[in-house]
Length: 84
Image (tube, rainbow, N blue to C red; front, side, top):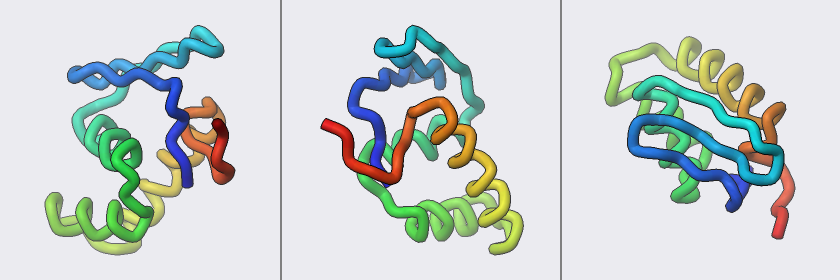
């Protein structure tokens, strides 16, 4: 999983893609996930972090994280392939 290097994220969770001109907002947890993805954390690391930090069961974390990652892929914020 690769984070699109062109994406800008503000400290408040505002996301901007200068290539498409699209912008988005996310909540605190979404912002944390984006920052961790941007830093190169794996899905497994994210799952463990969320489960421990927020005392959420494994199934819920996996489902909610998968849903969030799908939205990020749809909007070209992350991709399965490295893009230069």
